[in-house]
Image 1 (spheres, rainbow, N blue to C red):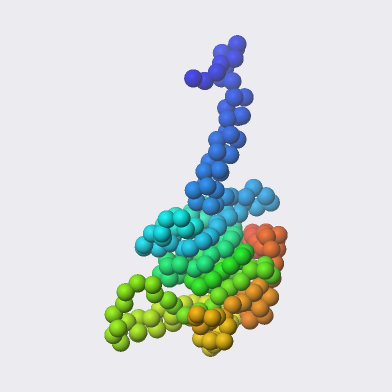
Image 2 (image 1 turned 120 degrees about the vertical axis):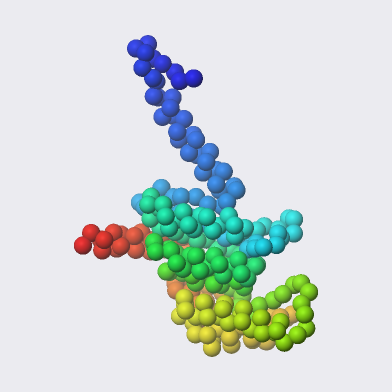
Length: 244
C-alpha cells in the first residue's frame, strides 16, 4: 500500500528511499550469482569476471569454482545492445577449461564494438589465453602467470588418425585466434606451446606478467586503474568522433 500525506498526495519519499535499496540488492545478487557489476564512475562500465574453470557442455565436479558460459553469453549480448553501457572490463583469473566454450566467449568479446579491455589477475592459463587477448586492449599484473600448452583431453578417445587431426584443427583454431588478436606470431606461440624443458609432467611455457608483455602476448603491464583509464579514454575518443 502506498503511503499518503495529509494532503492526499502520494508520499514519494519512501519510494525514493526504496529505489536505492532495491538497486543495491540487485547488484548484490548479480555479484553473487554471476560475478558481474556495472560501475557508476565517470562512465558506465560493465565488469565481468572469469574465474576458476570455464564450464562448457559438461558440468564441472562439485566443489570447483567455475564460470558458466551460458551465464556469460547473455551478458556480452547485453553489453553490446544496452545503450547505457559504454564499455566492458573483463577480469581474468582462470585455470582454463572447456575449449569450445572458451573460444566462443573469446569470439563474442572480440566482436563487441564498444571499448573493451581485459585484465589478467592471478592466472590466465590454457583457454584463458584467447580470452585474455580478445579485447581491444589487454593488461596483466606483474605477478600473474599464463600457461601456454597444447590442447588436452581428459576423456576416452579413439586411437585413429581422425582423432589426431581433430586435435590439430582445434589447436590451429586457438593458435590462429591468439596470433590475430595479439602481437605474438603463430610460430612463436607454437614454440612456447611445444617447449619441453619447463613443465615437469607436460610440455609448454609459463609466462609471468612481464614476460607476457615482452613476448607481445599481452599489450600492457598494469592494474585496475590502468585498464579503467584506457577504457575512459577510448570511450571519450569514440564519443568525440561520433560528434564530428
